[in-house]
Image 1 (cartoon, each protein chain N blue to C red):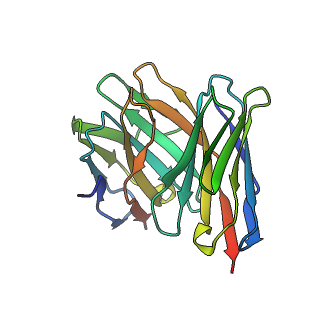
Image 2: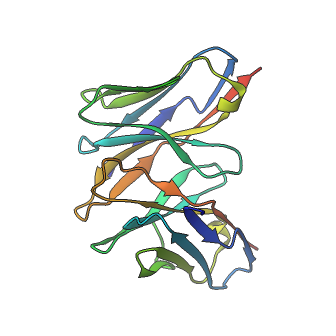
Length: 115
Length: 114
């Protein structure tokens, strides 16, 4: 089955700095890579995603890069703000025959942005 | 106008009991999921279900079973609860064949087994 490694487990930055979270996956059949943000006591929410036919995607201060050959993908947050503090999860997904997709999540990165 | 809802929000029960958690989505999605998030925040998929197939994570004990009365609901039944079942359980839904595979999560149910 798929195995997703996520690093670092904790990331502490100053407000305004950039933050980078990295993930690797093992199954070359994985073709969809979402990133979720989970604030304390809340549900995970999608913040950005990328498909295997794209190398990079950007949405305002957030960007994701994917290297299919090396099987790794990264989340980049620029100009971090205290409200970016949360746990971030990467996932690698394959599609089942019925159409649903089965994600395997990384273990999460706790991002702390100090004012 | 909550998109994905779960009940109850908190569930405290004794070992050996049988319990259910309900999930409903009003997004018109055709696929629903159950996840378990343990105390270390590890998020693990338990089931994926749509009208074409049920996919079960092979590590999930058969004490857990999903029941779907219709496309908008996927309930989770747990028999003979154990201490290790204590966790937050999230329901989620998505629309297959759409341009995005975004999963929308419910608010979670915190299960505590005493």
